[in-house]
Length: 390
Ligand SMILES: [Fe+2]
Ligand SMILES: [Fe+2]
Image (tube, rainbow, N blue to C red):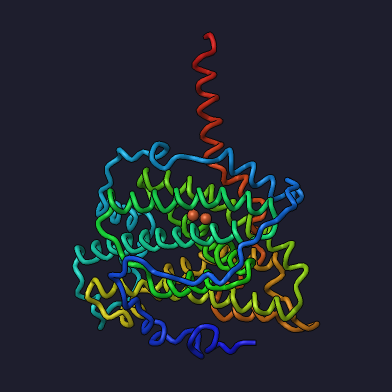
């Protein structure tokens, strides 16, 4: 069993100074090498559908492919500042901090232009991190194709590789053509992606990527999709989410079977990994690079602005898929003695996210998320109606 220090590099999970001390020191690097430490596995068992749930997911994925160049309305102009203002007006302001007492802080003197600039930078930062995370998913699923021993899972994972290529592509294009700047990868996110890739055990790739990173992404995309009125971003997220829901389902369905065979000690390793991933993702949400670019001390900014009730709720909501999925996999309470709380349950209590444990898990939810098939069915119905004699 690892100590908190060994798992996350600090004793106190909420040690703000230690969190902010982790920064990306090589923001100009163009390539980044990570050892993936795993064997590529062939299987000679080609029986398709031995795992029916994975086979169903694979068939769904084949018919739900879309084209990032032609299926999104790229011709639309995006006025980023107007979007920041509209978001602030419609959503009770994520950053305009109307309800916070900012007296005595740097923000007290901020003009409206500075708040708008913060909104613009935050969006550039957030979508940049999505793009980097998507590349992480691309690399992870390519690794899963090699390392998972089941043919149905190799088939499915190969469709996810294509999905992730498309996601990197559309986020990069949106950043380049519609927004106003890129950010390098956040150090906490980078550490997490490195840890996932470096682990030699095939199921850890799934746990880190499909359950934790993609579980958080699915919740974040859903939140932003609901919030934004920018039609291109809304459609982009709707399509990306319809893929992501399958990806998280892939993790849940694969690991459910595998974890049933593991010992308590092996499950404890998985619990610790899930906790580490949760902390890394939570740490990155402080968006320290944005504060630096705005010329504000990150520690002061985090204390003054990031603690607003809306922000705290937003950050907790991001775990609304992860926690029920961990519960479904048995990770919350694995290893707990009768009458005791499970180890991961206690950790999720510490970081304030256990309240989601009974929310719907993502094993089947992908069927409702399938925006691509819904749009195609609607287009076919409209065509049939137009062709029918009056
Ligand atoms: Fe993705
Ligand atoms: Fe994904």
